[in-house]
Length: 276
Image (cartoon, helix red, strand yellow):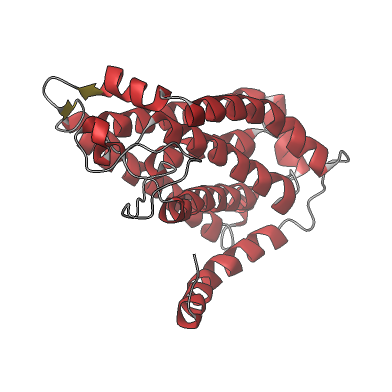
């Protein structure tokens, strides 16, 4: 997608505060020691198994009708021509709207902790973890949201098999030029839940138990958010699979390359590990 000069200028201006925040947060860790192993090796070791699972799942979904079949069997009432979660209060208000605000509140809390650490030295150890959490979640949701506007994929409720106006087109198949622009892939709401997998890296240096609990929290939130959206007809299974992969890749990359695999000072990390 091409942008005009005014648009490019507006994008640069809008990104400036975020760039300043990220630079300050990363620079804050210059005195923090990093581990001797290669950052790239750690990154690949943490990525390869999820990547293999993702490649297999994404390939199956991109070359078969599993997307449509799952939606038809599980989420769409073909007799009533109705998405099962469309009028459900728990799905629409509690999970969709409430989940959106939950993630926003968590990010805001992390930003407040980061800012307060400059005035209160007792909170200094939380400054890098809080900055990392906020940056990773914002980047994950932001990148997925940007991709939605570029990938040109329609929502499930827009597709002909479910009473919509547009034909179902496999992800990498040619799309007829006459089709209207779609903005539903990957799944943004699911990505905000999966983005909580960031908590795995937040606690990785302090406690394996906490780190795994954070990972489970992110997976659970992503599944709940994603299934709720599928039940409304907003997304298909493949949309969530791609969101989950991005929500692991982005925090992993930020942790490895921007924060050098070290969020906690050695004393705090050792104390946390000792209490695990």
